[in-house]
Image: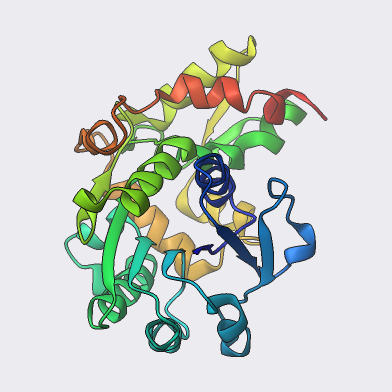
Length: 279
């Protein structure tokens, strides 16, 4: 039995579909399972990774887990998973752990702590480290739909935007192909793009210009304060500053795992165009 955590996320949703198409037994966990809509025949379960009380039922009969976790209770989860008979975890981590000081960056440290807890457990752990998700551009949707400029504190910061489908397909390969078991994989999109280049490509896809405003760090923090805590906002700003004018390092790991090149940002934009054009 495969347990997919974070079941409402785009990666987990696509991964569930892929495993189900293979005819494999799948259980999808979410803190709000009533919001899930998996393929017919796929089991759902309440699994809140901040609440260990929900762990035993979710892990019953499971041998393989796709995990997207915070550091809270990850050791409890690993211990219970091992006792339940789990032999393999594929962890969705982050390439931020490869930075110069991951322990000093709150975003990177949360992923690093999870990696270390799982690697210290008896369970074989395969780690996927995606860089920048193309879906981060979804944060611009409200501004674009309302005709307001997109605020960019570092418009020339480079990223390696990766489509969530490529992450899901890499996870599928890691879960089902024994050759990848226990590996460490850094995943990127196929091109290093600045924020400005992403905006330009998105504008071409939706067929209208997207105005941009060069914001200061403090202006951007005020604009995003309702949904990005200050400590994480500072971490993001510092990362963008370090990538300003500096092309991202790219890998061909998606193609190595899946057999096809990573999808370009324009494909993601076309797949999600309605989010930027429909009220």
